[in-house]
Image (cartoon, rainbow, N blue to C red; front, top):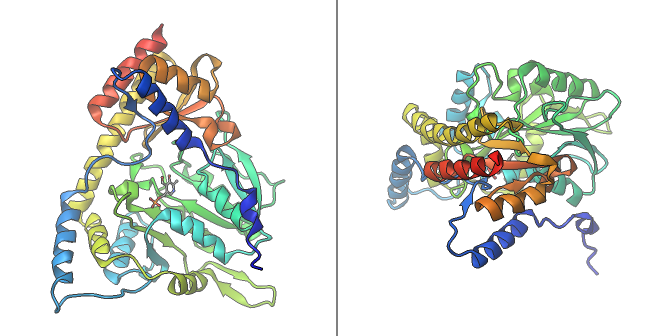
Length: 400
Ligand code: PLP
């Protein structure tokens, strides 16, 4: 008899987005005349940029010609893309070797797969509220999970607690769902904590391109010593609208090593390389050509045009909340606005209030963890005019 992985029984069913969809569908059926505006989406809405499209068209033509056709590519990604990403980091003052960069089909896959490198008896530390993938992937492999409180008091940026002992630490900055961003000094405290304990930081930088403030770090490797203790995940999903095209990258530095029980020095980069070459056959050539186009001067300009559009939407929402006196986090260096529900409403209560009285949809913060109760996530990923209309409706409702 096959013994199945019983850890799957410990997963909590995730109903957040399906519950939202059901409630919105029911409201829509009862109120067919109402135009519903969705500010809950975490997906991009603008089409792929011209630089990406023309690079992908050219790559399609190459694939159709015997002289330039390509079959299996390197599992780690093509050098042209790894080098383009290394050059992108260099522009931010971070020196990363191309062979420390691994191309994949998504940060979600990499965040999920990285746990292969760690033993089941590691203790995992995650913030609450949290991007649920960090939690569920570790429950699947049977690890103990500790939560650190992200609250309004600490700006939704929890800091290391010397009394807590953890081996694998997940940080996400700019954060989903709160939009909060760690500064360099705060990240240094995490790097120091991880190095002291020989823990590994798993740093999710999926929203780094939304950082506009020159003082804020885009990468954990902007902090000295991070290469000895951190793995960084990043994605073109939000940087360049690749949510449906799929391309991301993970950085595992040469300097990241840990001792095995037998005293041998284990390189996490070599282990990840082995894992990827064994279980993954690479991202399509056409997609990697499109991704490389993002890192050209023209591509970056076009990417930032879209990011500025989304951030402009977030600013419209933020300005309205400032005028209404509603407390919120995020918005400035992130597509997410994390607002406090007015009049001490609970997250789901406010969800219904907003849907029924303004026909606007957001995401209840309670769906991201206990500390999300009483908070609500809105995003700048929508259409400009619809965002303005939603903000007008919300303002009219909450002014009363
Ligand atoms: N990390 C965070 C924090 C995210 O919010 C998301 C997507 O919403 C991802 C990773 C997944 O990115 P990808 O589309 O590259 O799988």
